[in-house]
Length: 365
Ligand code: NAD
Ligand code: DAU
Image (cartoon, rainbow, N blue to C red; front, side, top):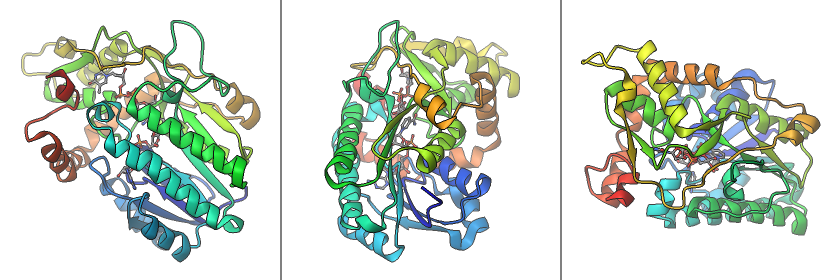
């Protein structure tokens, strides 16, 4: 695929979508126009792209819409003559899917279906539909082994089941209708602009404020961490050189137990910010709490296909990526204040009543 002219990015005000738009406009020779469609749920922060809109003027357009709204999305496809799609928009937090699966079925399954159907109806003009997915569709690993592109799907949470369903739909639209689909399944991302309900930003911000650091279960669940910028580079590489109808596994080859991640963050926050009032190390804030129901034990990605066929490799180690991430959160208190207000508080109050500080407390109480 050569450079897209009118690239529809869905969910561009979320964590990975915002990093992807910034990467494309600021760091690549991409010469087309980006149409960012986002519903602006609690997880979105328009501040993440405020400067992009200013700097890139006519090459960046924002439309507030729900990807499951067929009428609104048909208007976007036609008004902007969309020829390429990179689909990030989704409900993305496992804990929330346990408490309230409805939004996940609606956004992740029906939203993806709506986009695929609209793309199919405009097939001659569509050059690529890239669907962004997760390693969680494969389920949980024991102590050994890796997920490959051939691993059978076995999703365990409502979130991962909804993502698995959307992956199957995307693949089926390629096989049945010839839509030029590619799919990527990626491991846990971390980095700037991540909503602080996910482990790494939650622990950074709680550690800064001297709050409790909740670790689920025994803290020995393993995740394979990838710096978000490396994920963005992988997605763009697939969109340019990946083969239609193929799926690609993306991961960091950075397997770590949760407790190690949390301890590393404590040490970095101690090093880079003001000490706690009692001058004790932040590790003392770590608290083991009741486990997440159905908590997958271990994820690990085999990314040989990305490396061999597309020449992609992560550039950040966990040490360099985590340091940049902690520094970013320290330097952006305004972004944090914004995401902790407005839509987020409204959503929490509407669904759980006021006073809830972490989604997991909804199933722990
Ligand atoms: P996020 O929750 O930070 O952002 C999601 C964005 O999508 C938000 O801006 C939200 O407003 C928007 N959105 C949600 N529902 C929408 C709808 N119906 N219509 C339009 N916009 C809607 O999520 P993220 O972490 O950036 O994840 C992006 C994608 O990457 C998701 O598809 C997720 O499954 C996938 N993924 C995430 C990770 C990770 O570690 N975060 C890893 C692998 C794959
Ligand atoms: O693997 C890719 C997936 O990674 C993405 O598809 C999801 O969108 C993304 O949310 C993420 O899912 P996880 O459930 O792995 O991420 P989370 O940050 O919620 O949790 C990471 C690990 O840390 C997990 O084992 C649960 C644990 N955890 C999480 C939180 C929020 C804690 O121990 N304490 C916490 O407070």
